[in-house]
Image (tube, rainbow, N blue to C red):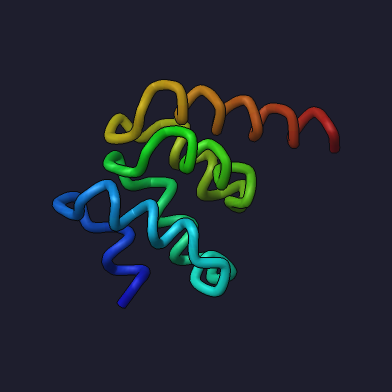
Length: 86
């Protein structure tokens, strides 16, 4: 249920803040992913959890026009950095 709420576009920003503040919920990858990809999530929260996404999701996010430009650039930077590290 929380993963579904975290991806809802119509949910209030404060609800997303409450989800991100709950450690138990934030241990679950689908919740983290949905929260980061939700355009309504406050940017500092999304940026903070961006590095937890797997490379495949980061690549998709780097091309997603529905997320903030800053998040797209940061996702691309992380993917590029991981690629250079290997």
